[in-house]
Image 1 (cartoon, rainbow, N blue to C red):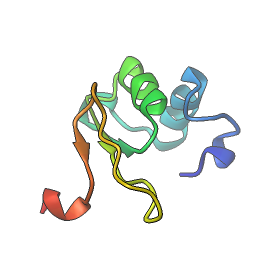
Image 2 (image 1 turned 135 degrees about the horizontal axis):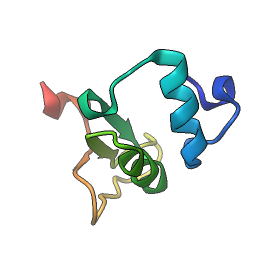
Image 3 (image 1 turned 180 degrees about the vertical axis):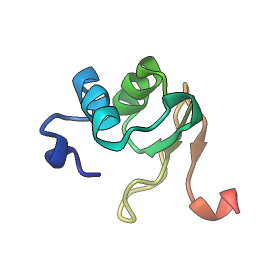
Image 4 (image 1 turned 120 degrees about the vertical axis):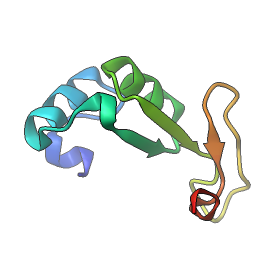
Length: 79
């Protein structure tokens, strides 16, 4: 789901409330991958149980690992 579909930025707590209404998901059984730490913080505060930082959000930039969240630089590491 694109944040434009919800009409709010993922950094806003209201985004997660609207997303939950739309998708009927259980935050305690959810995982979120994002390259923005503020998004991860907001999702975690909403109750998303697992948040993982994408350290290499762009192929044009070097990986930048988080000091506060589990980070990955490749989804292959999850396989």
